[in-house]
Image (cartoon, rainbow, N blue to C red; front, side):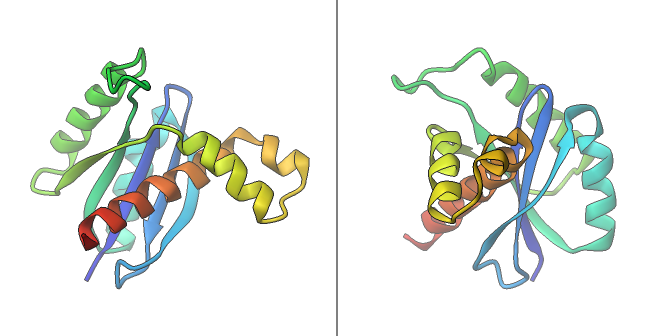
Length: 138
């Protein structure tokens, strides 16, 4: 069984998370620059078996598209073109950054580490992935 890779796409930084090979646990993986994300993913898929991608889809409180939504949709299309046949799922990513901050605080990370946006992006990707894993179990 391959891993599931989660992507918290942003115009500057992209947070990534991956499951274990049993697809039970979501772990923060890496934060890469948006321009480098497809190169990173191609290399990762060559090293590790990947069964699917999960991409966080930005929505506002009224469940409507945000200013970032078209960028994420464009990225999903590029992802589907670069990895034909690989399932790409989207997950509502509302509140993941706030939840990531709370999780890091609860985990005892120092203030400087919690302010590091790349750490927040990785943890947000892990939360998106965990949300996806839990939705499959229902």
